[in-house]
Image (cartoon, rainbow, N blue to C red):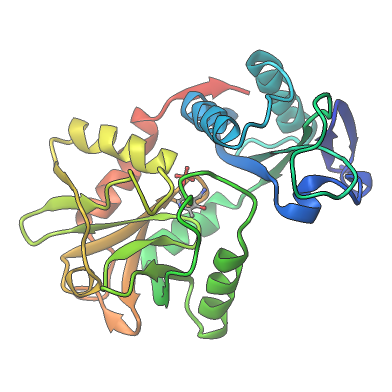
Length: 287
Ligand code: PMP
């Protein structure tokens, strides 16, 4: 079955899904995106994802390309046309197509929108969660507005590639003072010896992950204590458990950091509990 993408109002075969060479997303990374998980035919946490999209668009003064209701319909249509039951739906909005000039184009240039969906292998995801991830660290080198989910991801690309070349699964950005920021495409958490969940506050320096927000709800339901504060790389290395959260991986244990084993080198019990309880708590919208 051929894959189908949505591009500016049309459903087109994936291999013919194209944007113009003067799309500002292509030329300036002048655009934003969202990735939502699809689980058993439902879009997970769609309200929170579209609220964050709204915030990203407002921060960059890009107009909504269509109504929120129409966007939900188009997302569902792409999911159905690609027969995705478990996977991801990706949506990207850029400032549109205009002659290359750094300043915003004339009013009336319509934002571009692209939606794609793909299946994910849930068995492979479960296997990975059963063994956990090895991560490396890289110096923080991104701009200070990483709270906006822009398609400008070059530092993240280089960090992930560095991890791959080193035989690790992922990379974390760490400040010069040793403070852990976040992963290349995920938020980072630790579980202390006293079973307290710790994750960096999201006011500055990281993306406010939707999975992160929902894990707060899951933790409350499980009556686990949470602290939102900075933590250092040394604290992470000495933690009882470490995990990462993202829409793509949900709750994923980390078992080594820069070659140093976390606890006994196996995924922690609290991490796996949060992973298991996640879908009982997350919002599920029909696709
Ligand atoms: N931080 C970064 C840099 C990311 O790219 C992502 C993935 N979108 C996250 C955190 C996690 O966000 P979410 O839980 O919304 O997927």
